[in-house]
Amino acid sequence: MTIWQLSWNEKTYNATQRMFAAAASEEGKHIVQSWGRSSVKNISKIKRGDTVYISCNKKCIGKAIIVQPFNQTTEVQIDRFAINRPERRERISNKWSCHLKITEIYFGDYQKDLRGNQNTFCNPKNAFWK
Image 1 (cartoon, rainbow, N blue to C red):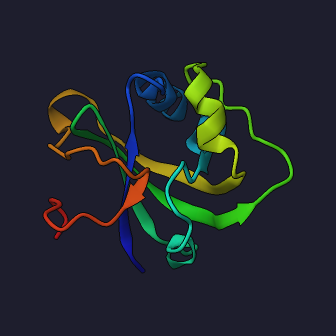
Image 2 (image 1 turned 30 degrees about the vertical axis):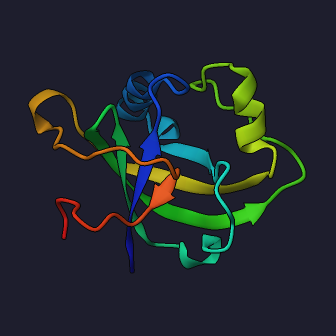
Image 3 (image 1 turned 90 degrees about the vertical axis):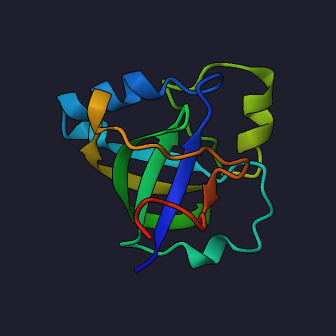
């Protein structure tokens, strides 16, 4: 299994409310995550069972596992935590998404430093888990 980093931009995604929803219910732990605007040449490297650390605002706010790897769908999934901006449509227009289950949520002092990245999914060289 591989460990990945998923970066959320606080200007386009309400990460805090997403994590509160995950803490509040089992249903809230299941999310659909888009691939974003990056090239899809490496998309097949992300597999079921891989671990994903979630970053926002240069902090690790959670941990998840890949429940269903990326596939292309006919419909765009609506995410109530996405901040509605014109660029959001472009980010999800390729219709590649995966399903994650949030397994750990970090608040306050439990959040480790984890620099964000331009790519939504990446495998950083100097992450705290390496």
